[in-house]
Image (tube, rainbow, N blue to C red):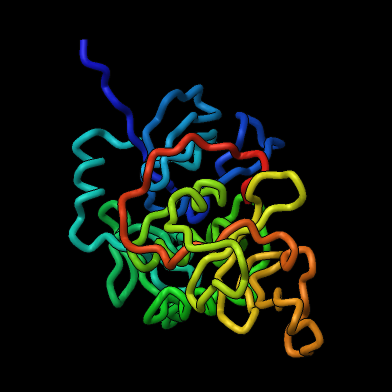
Amino acid sequence: MKEVKRYGVANIGIVPIRETPSDAAEMVNQLLLGETVEILSDDGIWTHIISHFDNYQGWVSSTQIRGLSEPDFHHWVTHPERRRFPYRSTLVQGNSQSHLQIPCGAFLPVSYRGIEWFGEDYFFSSEPVRIKGKDVIETAHAFLGVSYLWGGRNDGGIDCSGFIQTVHMLHGITLPRDSGDQFRFGEQKGTRLDEAEAGDIIFFKYKDRPVSHIGFYLGKGLLLHASAQVRIQQIDPARQSETEYSFNQALSEGIEGIIRPYKPSPVQSILKNHETQR
């Protein structure tokens, strides 16, 4: 007998994906409103899922996932107006007086008035602020000041690999979730800072650990990355006396590789090691 797949969709703005089925478990990733999953199991409290966006597997609260029949699932993922929400996180209100938080990157039908959520229209209470720029680096700058959050991938809290993934996602480029996988996914060009050009991605490691950090290179020794918050730091030892940006010595000594800017490509299926790759 053919196995019947079960589907679901993130039913609130931000759904934590946990390593194990417990509120105390580590948050390893997130689903954003409108993103779909395959349901592997569900005990009514915790649902074991695989995200369709980046093939990430984990556990979510069953109350935060809306189950979908196969026809409803196919209707949702083929909706002609469904796209990534290009604005800063905002709230919308529905005709039924219900409210939804819409994080940057949510994947749903968006119009100039608001969003559609399974047959109900939700409207902006004020004009949203656009975060998506004309290119990847401009969008990355729009995240400056966003707090660091392990497992985060939205403008309310983000980790280093989530920052890289989310910024590219807004431009239609799908990347793996973790920094080690992002490193293997890219086109490598060197390991020395003098080989890097503005727009490249730089990867770092600490001592004998695997790749564990990542950021956008802006040129002139400057790195735009998520560390404590999304910020710009200097990583060129020859420029450490410059005072406009703080110098990060650990990163200056820990460059593992440089890759060229990512281009649109289907995400690769890569076995993930979630221990240190954020």
